[in-house]
Length: 184
Ligand code: HEM
Image (cartoon, rainbow, N blue to C red; front, side):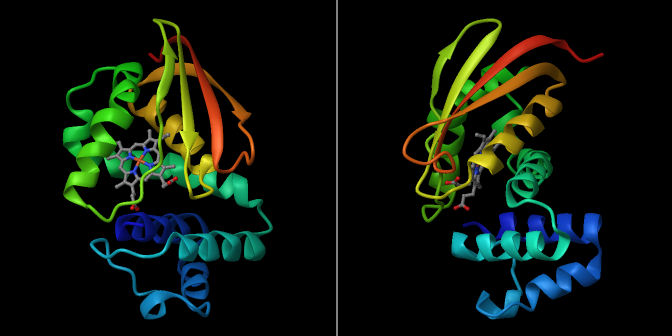
């Protein structure tokens, strides 16, 4: 998993829970280079799970909630770092239609070692878009947060409904986004 994802997770922890919490999390055993992550590095997604579970234990907040908040935080960071990915689009639906076939594909060209989920749009019209998330990694909650961050980025008011897909809702989920208008 790209180092940028790690450095942004730590930035979120510092902002919401303080430097001390971030230090504590990074002092856990088993982290690469003692948790000295760099944005250009590449680390096992298991270390991300260690960090999230560690944060949940220390704050008493549920892991899924923390993952969603993180996804929401991460979207604008990805959009800023990979501005080619968002620049051509003026609305979330057009953007999301290109995520699987264009944007994540471009990311993989830049970083052949990137581990990306499959996020095909399976149905779309003017009002509703259905996207599936399928991954070897259990990050459907992060995907939900990223989708919320994406809607906010494009200033769209919409509801998000999620269903677990078998066999495991963390590795596979279906999201239905229903537009209710454009935020003022
Ligand atoms: C500006 C738009 C986006 C860019 C540039 C982008 C790029 C990336 C990058 C660089 C990673 C890390 C890959 C790795 O660590 O090896 C990633 C992972 C991921 N992306 Fe995207 N992404 C974007 C939007 C989204 C959105 C809207 C979703 C929502 C479904 C999404 C779902 C995910 C998930 C859940 C992961 C974690 C890996 C996994 O679950 O398998 N991304 N993406």
